[in-house]
Length: 279
Image 1 (tube, rainbow, N blue to C red):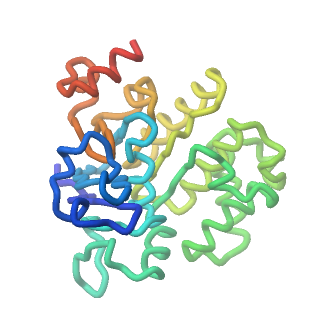
Image 2: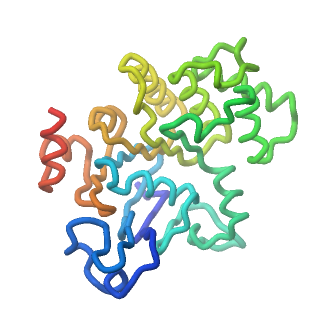
């Protein structure tokens, strides 16, 4: 099956850079901190494909670069290098590297074609406006204008994510952590995204709440045929949701493959350590 999302050589550096950063083989450095100028290479030459109706997992410890990668794909950070193509998406009649779009075009593309759920609901929701209002904000950015249609869409999404319709006009600050995550999911799905990004969505939740949120994500992915990228340090989450998995360390992809293969027969010493530590 032909991939519809293709990422090649995606890199992100935080710092001014130097000759070592620009010309040395950074794979020889044991971490992602430049020994000469202290520039941090958060992502280095990351490449992958995402197929229709596929869930790709990205796993690694804190500081591995997995959340930075998601923010690059969501245009929250400016990439230092790389290409990002979405097949079937064209600007001015041409297939274009999405990373080269203007800031306005990136916002437009993100609003119409992408959804994201953050680890911290405060990053994805306005806590002082209603849950329905949070969804309406996303829909307005995606070009919706009819108020009754927006409200109907918001009500349907909240019901789909198991939020009582009677609480639609309540702000998320009144909700539990699990309910806030479900409102985030409803907001992320409101524009029928081609790509859904999940960044540590169960971290910090009680185990029973984690299970409910994961069951909801699995059901919605199956029903809506979503293509998803799931970031987590929890191999259990990756095993449950993802068909393929990439393992990151110090901003680099050290291993990738089918999830069962990576979990059952890890090849890289770091992956072996991750798997053994969670057995």
